[in-house]
Length: 402
Image 1 (cartoon, rainbow, N blue to C red):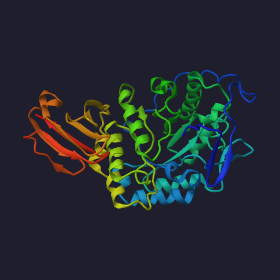
Image 2: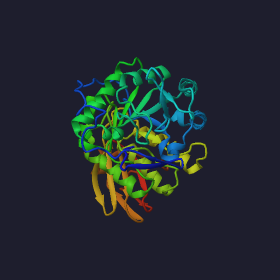
Image 3: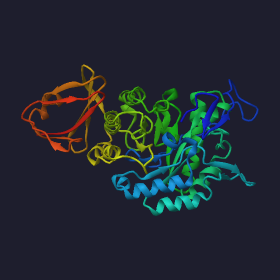
Image 4: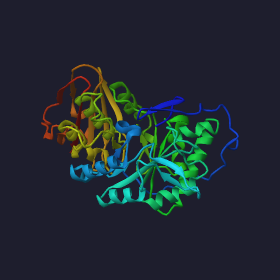
């Protein structure tokens, strides 16, 4: 959740933050100390799945909301489909006590009790922090308290940390070296905290983070600015990943940001496109809606097991562009079992598409079978595939060759 301006409105309260400094301030050295590369923690062999509070709740999130989300995920099939992380974004933070330990604010109270509640439902808890003295929303960050906070998170039972760079812009010049050292410092602290914690970086993809992110010990890193609940924002962030496939795979994922499915800014077809594209890439699947009130169409999209299986394929191969048919992007991805998944993504108005199976490669000239993953139906492979796509619609096929 990078912070692009000096002010942000949260829960009806205007927070005024310092404008990022052009150079170092008196509160920090000119640049952070060097930190050795951090070894992989061995986590996130598949893209993480779960829920994050920011897209829908922003600063309104409370412990009661988090408990409700955990209850809902355990009851509505999301947990069993693989959505296991319940992630609290910014604004949970309170003040530090006399020993320097971070405390939750009054909206959250006992964080260990909240983690226990989430764990009791077969789920995992995620938190948010920043390498700055303040977070994006002006709450207490982890600067100068990295080891202390990592141990605190571990003691509470935290399983996932989203670490957002923007607060550190007030402390140091914005350079790749400074970002990398600060991210390494928390990565090192998490490795020494005594608990497995998935480590997620957020900084908009600056300085080609996919090239050096693994050296911070992170499991995933944002590659784009914050997503918005609209077609152009979503499609730009998703298609951006096609250029980054070489740097993404098991344990280290490119992250185009969270799902907006169900938040109301896009059509059902557009939300189905986001789920299709994120799964094909593959990308983390972090729902961002109010799970308590989602309608049947939203549930059908988020709980499509056949599409989720594409995202969670153990090989973790990236998607690639096969061709364009007018406004339709045709993407493909190789799967661990030898099948191939084909995605048709319509960037324009209603469109017809056609795909002779041999375009997928010689072994698909005589296909052993094909299946439409949204219609949950077998496809006749004796003829080339043909279909019509609605405006901004998508289709996913899984195809087996002989």
